[in-house]
Length: 639
Image 1 (cartoon, rainbow, N blue to C red):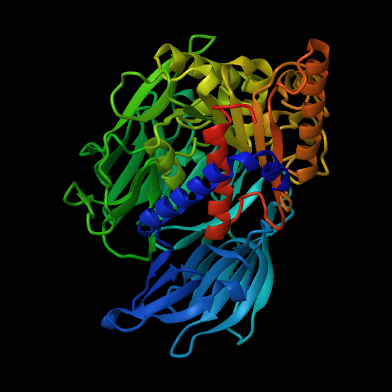
Image 2: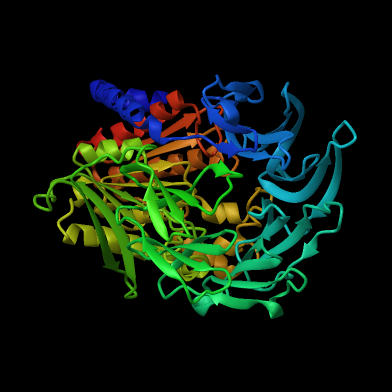
């Protein structure tokens, strides 16, 4: 932080201006951010501030009762997951501090005098089977490999091991079926999965294996009416399809196809109700719902969601009875808006009273860029006003392109601030991400990782061809694994951008993937490769690794935010990157006689915070305001 302040002291007034503006925007949209809500039979449980409360459903006007202050468990804590036991005798919640990836599970015994009865450390996921039986996965050094059963029926907590994963490429997580009859033990690697079923009515029984892990088979399981509903990647181009089978015959040879999405469609989620199934899917341009009766798939109906929607979030209400699918829609500049879909009535409702949709004259443009190999890469672009005279507008380009994950396009007040300030915001859905399904991810990982780099270049060039900004007014931003493409782009095409703003970026792929002592190296070999044992992987990674390919040339101004307690991207690796970057820039300036005229390079580190960044609103606004100031000034002038 001191490094940053020393270099932008002359822009102090601008920094102050953006802090004030950001506070105003965060206050303006705070009512759009709701914490977890759990509906019980007797009470409603909800999060507000740093506490969990409950209110009696028979008397909703009474003063809410505080059950737990999160700060009493962890300093600067955030709530991760909340689960209510079936008979509403216990409530369990995981609480995580900023400085650690491991969370603590707090179990409260409810009743007339609620009290904390147990705290289990290092918990990743958990689900109740019965009131006195809780299953959880333990987490250590970013790994989740064990499932335990925690019982309270003897008056004190007793723990027993249920499952132990032997393959370090896999990560273990628990989920409960919507009908609350089974807990699924989900063992997932980047390319394979395996599911075991725990019967909630007989939790002491040995979990039942659905389908043994098979090469390149990924599947997820839910339950309804003694049948398993399975999302599996066995469709055309290895995309997801929905299948079902009887609980008594769960293996793959008994799976029967009941739903398959069309081409260039990503199956996002599935919700099972008493008599219906709702599929949430997306194309590059929009989201939609497909609904059909469980007994007659041919009687399906399709509901198109609003064209401005770029992100979908399942509603936080848990244990809510009734056949209603609740979810939120948002975009980077549009605050979350609540929606309800009734499968029975086949109607979509908007809960106008919960959140307000802010009306703007924002233009949303869905367009494509043709990559080097001819592939069309989708982009989503936002700007204010007409399409005229956009060449002189500043442009902020977002990219991720890893792990089959969609680029984050949820609402952020800072994005809305930049839009209102005249910026163009562009989101590049490059290969390696998940926007176009599993095949889109496969086309941008391992020895195809550079496809994402080609896609990013094609997107930025196409933006300029469309008259959207110009290189001297363009900034590129990325977080975590998105730093690979952003960092590689700086090495290959520095003339196309003026500034880069990175948050906890992964930049030294080659060294990290050759070090098995690092927490995620083995798990992530299916994404990046195994350079320690495979020479072709090593050579390929070396050809694009941001750290490996730093060289004497002109670079854009680069600002990196790092977190001292980050277990995923160690601070030392970012210091090494920054120091080497400064060396190659200095070498270039010395050889070409341009000392002091090149880019500004800053590493801003935050103490006591892990990879996800600060959860405290004040600290978060401080960090975001620094990024916003840099977005505003780095493209405009050399520091």
